[in-house]
Length: 416
Image 1 (cartoon, helix red, strand yellow):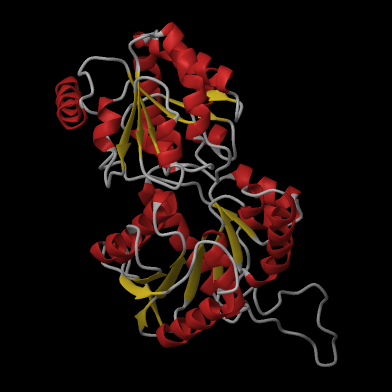
Image 2: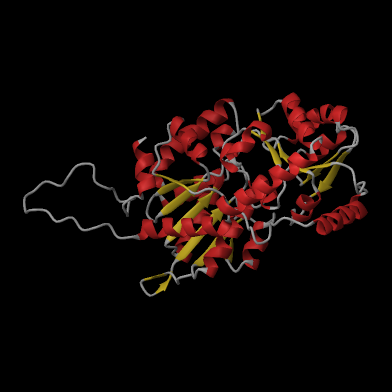
């Protein structure tokens, strides 16, 4: 990959993230790993805790401590002030803010003075109700002026933002996963994975296994899957559900969990769970484009998902009829899961198709290369405009935030 320099030095990108775990942490870590390989100077500002700081440092990024809580609140002014100091100290060429809280603080701190990419990773106004949703939407509409690009992880996410009145300068780059790591396991490797998990958790080695990987919280919808599980057991009595992850709803859900549900706890690498699984399920209430289904598909596992933002774009098009169900519908979820558990040959076929799709369309190296091209577009000098003396400047020209001509994709989106 080419070395990227700006005025005799490496291009510096400051990633700012809160949260520090889950899919956002994996996206940031994968990006910085690939950016460092490409010769960029990647920094990550984030709170302590979670996995992001340690994982980003292991990937070669410089990690800066930024104390910030997950939700907005009275600490926001101090959090923004601290972030402003970090930005002055590091002098990045590009600021890349991930998720709602970092997007809020970063855009307040920068206000367009540095090329800024805001990546929502699912819209904040879809995550809450009532007044909180109205305030989040008001902010996103207002703050779009301070993002040189609003980077969506799916076309569906961009459409939802546009329909809600967010008038951003859009870019769409779909999520990707490490397809060198997440690969199909052969039969022997699957048996070893099953045996290893059985030894650790008491899981019967040959029972039908459904795996759900994700933070245990309202967004990911594990409570809906637990309500669906008795319906699955009615048709597949021996099936076991493994919930892999941790989160604020774990203990509450554990107390009311139906039979044959394993709370497996968090993992730094879910690949063994995908290898052992017969089917992977993600019953989310909202997303941008979830990573766990992409990882599972890259491992050759079929997935059942709720039809939230980005879900249809994640799947091979012919899988939608069997693998997409409405959100918060336990009966539909139970029918879809049981139908695939009862048909091993169909699962194998869907798994092979899923693997080909994920490796072809969702390789993280392609995602990182597209983000790199976006950075270079933002930093490209605007062409000089030569005017006849006394001629008035043209109306509608680019303002100080728009330091480069938009890509054809971005131009198309801005007209919609």
